[in-house]
Amino acid sequence: MKKVDTIKTTSLFEGLTTAEIETVATLIFEKKFDKGETIFFEGDEADGFYLVSSGQIKVFKMNPMGKEHILHIFGPGEPVGEVPVFSKQPFPATAEAIIKSTTYFFPRNDFVALIEQNPSIALNMLAVLSRRLRQFATQIENLSLKEVPARLAGYLLYIAEEQNNGDVVRLPVSKGQLASLLGTIPETLSRIFARMSDEGLIRVDGRSITIVDRDGLMDK
Image (cartoon, rainbow, N blue to C red; front, side):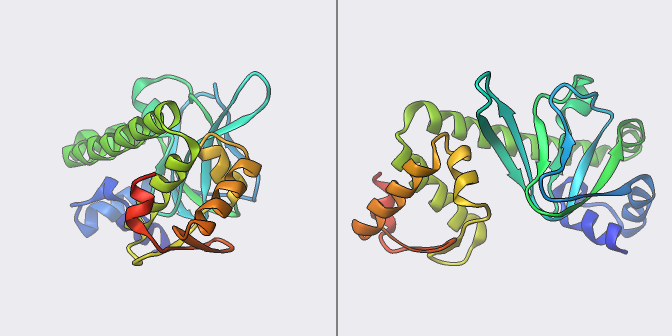
């Protein structure tokens, strides 16, 4: 039942009947990872992809100097590493569990056969990939065209919309991981948080951020 419940939470399998979802559940198997454990390395053969059941997984690349840059952070109900499955290319980045995580692994050949039987899954996959493409386009724009304060402001407004909890935002990752995601260093991010607090834009309480002046953030 846990497999079925996890499958139901992802848009990848939206529209499938209960019987079809139960069929999908028979194709996958559980893989658990401890905090800091690598799920796959950049360059590994992409023989399948993962669906997060619980926990958090970061996908990142390392530059020649050994500095980590986080590309994306995935939570429950989100697929990880699905693109190379179709391109038959190796994984283009490394994935690691941020906290203790449970995933379900979809073997490539079984999943391709499933798509052939259920074309609606292919359409759902296109929708997921389109969202990812928009997210990466926004990330590239932020990193190349915006200063760090504007990147942070945009991220807080985006998370507020995603969490749908009014003006209170709960950071899903540590501030160190957030710094990597925004293309900066923790010390710089801490100074920007402090400056935004002094300016009356936000109120910070650990990982809980209250947006005090939404218009001011949008103007960053």
